[in-house]
Figure 1 (spheres, protein in one colour):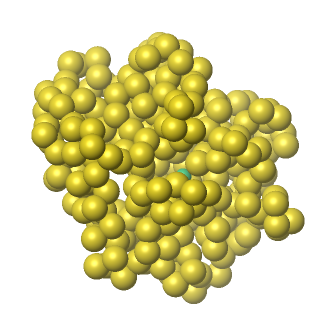
Figure 2: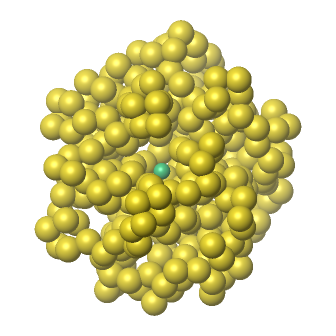
Length: 274
Ligand code: MG
């Protein structure tokens, strides 16, 4: 690995290797037909996120958001991608305030001023889609609104850099540089984006930091999930006693935005769109 031996893939903090590494597989390039299937999976993820956005408000319980997501994914012809994945017990991850990723839906009630990260994955016809957004419940201070804007902006900076002929490190550097240009934030290092396709987590890993010009060469047909996680405080993280929920080490707020995209001959194509 070119980056950092300690980098773990998103959604698998207990294991250093991605599924493709475990299975001895390399980076996969998708055919036009395969990309079409990934677009279908991506559409289901995007529509589900749309429904969840409407549902996030003070008073809603995170379990209700999970049920809504499962109903939507199923109604649209997909299956939840995260449920049962390495033992994850729910359809979506719901991570509130200082929770960064992998929060488990349950009895917790969303309160006015919370920021709620929703990570949604679906599988359709053997292919995965994966995306995330952070939504504010009611009014939040300007500083928090800005955290969300900076994180989403960093995702789009990463997407713009994901072109054939560029390297994974160019995506990583673009994300990091965008965040740095907007102020003093912590870009999470321990959890990263990933290749995606027939597996939820394929090679290559896609960190949100690091020097440009390094890493895997991007080619048309490669599909990756880019997912910056940005904290109001430092980048350090820790995992709660449930063995899943990742929180900021300093208790600061955190935002997370993700899209699944395809590398093409021209503009990168976002697959997780309605
Ligand atoms: Mg992901």
